[in-house]
Image 1 (cartoon, helix red, strand yellow):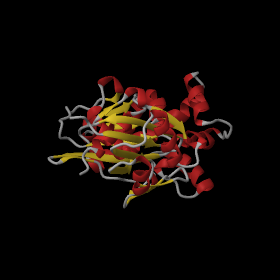
Image 2 (cartoon, rainbow, N blue to C red; image 1 turned 30 degrees about the vertical axis):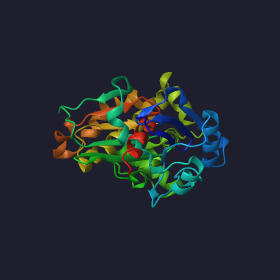
Image 3 (cartoon, rainbow, N blue to C red; image 1 turned 90 degrees about the vertical axis):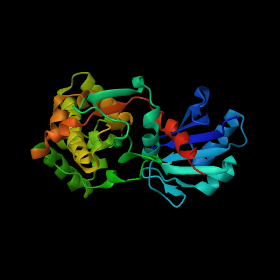
Image 4 (cartoon, rainbow, N blue to C red; image 1 turned 90 degrees about the horizontal axis):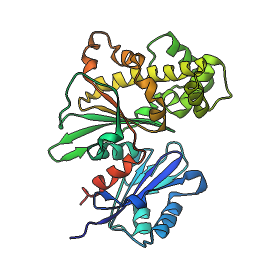
Length: 315
């Protein structure tokens, strides 16, 4: 019996990634990336992509969106796009449409990733088991996290918007950064610090510089610029503090998985002892936090692998 043809999409603040799958298997030659700035709506991209693939319809569609999803409708957090499952069904001809948060799609992909897709930046002292809870954390244009629960009825990844919760400070340097951002922007969230522009905000607060993009800062750090290295180390320490808190909130003994371009670029600093120290700086629970492992997902298309898994589970 042939497998259902699925259109899958992962829509971030900057790019839309798309592919066709036969059941759970992605067609390697179908994986495509579109720049969102080149298109007015996602529906325009659907038309273009199906035309490129020589398709007029698919059996199922799964669309992962960097923003909250409710009642078959989604809105982007960092882009003025909206989505409706009924419109996606009309555009694709799909009998089943799954509209989910992008972190949910990443959670559904974890069991499908190859070893070479994963870089361990902090090895915990506990051996993970298949039924252990995991958590996926997205560090890209935006920031968010979602727990991954493995139940008898399958994998469950509830949506979350923790990126917009107030960030806590753990030392004087972090307090200095947050105070500087608060003076300019008011409320300071996890996303203000841990997404891509967080590097620029930290640079402004610590080095009084407004002239470097996040990419410029990371390039300068790689070249040995001391001020840029301090910015990257500070973001990594913020991450350690926040992720250590998330570990206590969700107990992801199966591992913490970081996704996104910021996580990949920051991985040398996430491997540093300063990150691990910040992660475990939890008072009498410091030893407890040593059991968690932290990994960076290197595959930029991992969410596309999770989309078919999700939509194939729908009735």
